[in-house]
Length: 123
Image (cartoon, rainbow, N blue to C red; front, side, top):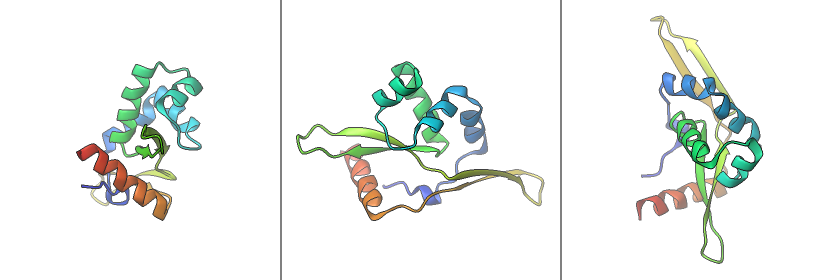
C-alpha cells in the first residue's frame, strides 16, 4: 500500500528523537533538493552506514522520504527528500503533547514517483 504522508502522523517521541540528533539535523539542513545517500554522506561528512541509520530515523519521524529515480539504463537509484515545511508541537486541552507536520503540496510527478517506489518495494 502506498504511504500517504499527508495522512501520516508520526509519534511525538520519534520526531523529538530525530530533531534532537545533530546528524539528523545536518541531513535536514543539507536536503534542499533530493539527494542520494552517497551525495548526502559526502555533503555532511557522515559515514554511509551511520547515514542510513539516520535516514531511517528521519523516515520513521516522517521528516524525510525515499523516492526511486527511474533511469533508462535500468539502474534505478534512491533519492531522499525533506517532506516537511514545519513541525509543530503543542499542548492539547487535555494537557497532552501533540505533534503536527505541515507538508508542501505533492505534485502529480511526485505522486507517480511515490507510487512507483512503493510498487518496487513490494516486488
